[in-house]
Image 1 (cartoon, rainbow, N blue to C red):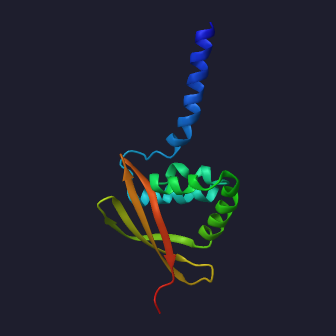
Image 2 (image 1 turned 180 degrees about the horizontal axis):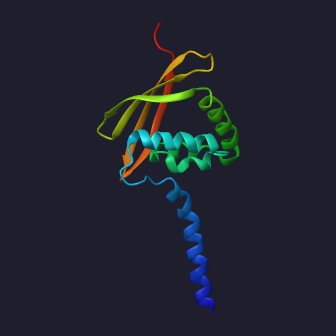
Image 3 (image 1 turned 90 degrees about the vertical axis):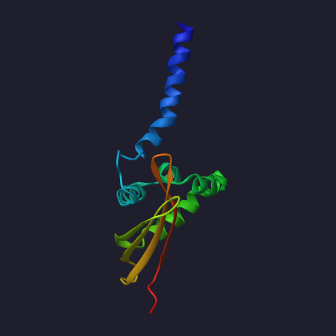
Length: 140
């Protein structure tokens, strides 16, 4: 009986570790644009940085996890504020790269003017992950 309880407890721990990662797994045949759209929806709902870690590339995860745990909420609030400034994000171009894909996007910035985005996605195994994302105003 004690062995069975140990096995059940171990199984519950493993399920707890893998369920968040499974939620971020790509549906079969998901495109880079579909992944990015799914990431944006998850980002909008996120209340802490750990909510979006399953979408991040290994390099991005390392950077985030290197931040002391006590500082992560403040860091995430800043990222959330900056990330929420652009609305109506629309992917306008997709290019394959050696590591994944580069998406070019446009959105409306906080000043209601057009901004351009470059989103680097990487493939880790069969799954898309967010590498980097940058936004800027078009050259005048």
